[in-house]
Amino acid sequence: MRASAIAHVLNAEVITCQELADDLEIITACGSDMMSDVIAFVKDRVALLTGLTNPQVIRTAELMDIRLIIFVRGKKPSSEMIQMAKEQSIMLMSTQDSMFIACGKLYQAGIMGDIAYQAR
Image (tube, one colour):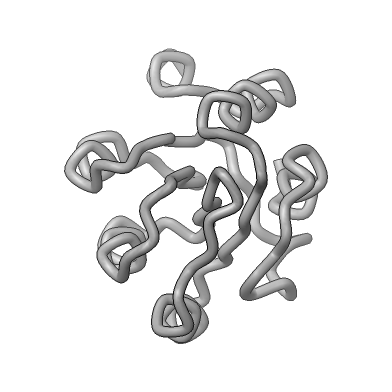
C-alpha cells in the first residue's frame, strides 16, 4: 500500500516528505512505544506506529531503514525530530486515532502483521 493511501485510511496529516507519498510502498506495520520491540520486529517496507515523540524514534527508524513513522493519538514530533526525519528522508504522519484503531484500520485495508508477513 502506498503511503498516500495510508494517509487517507488514517485521515493522517503528512508532516514531512510529502513528495514520497506516492512512491513509498508499505507492506507491514509495527505498533509500539518500545523501540527495542521495533528493532526485534523490523521487516522490509514497514510503517512504525507510535505514541512516543522523542528523537530515539527517528534514530531507531534510521537504524532499521524504516521510511514511515505514524504518530497516534494526535501526537506531533518536535522540530528537532522533523529536521532529523527530513535529513534521513523519513516520512512522518500524525493521526488522531489511537494505536489500536490505527492498527486495525491498516489491517482492514490490507497491511499485514508480523505472522502474516512471515508466512509469505
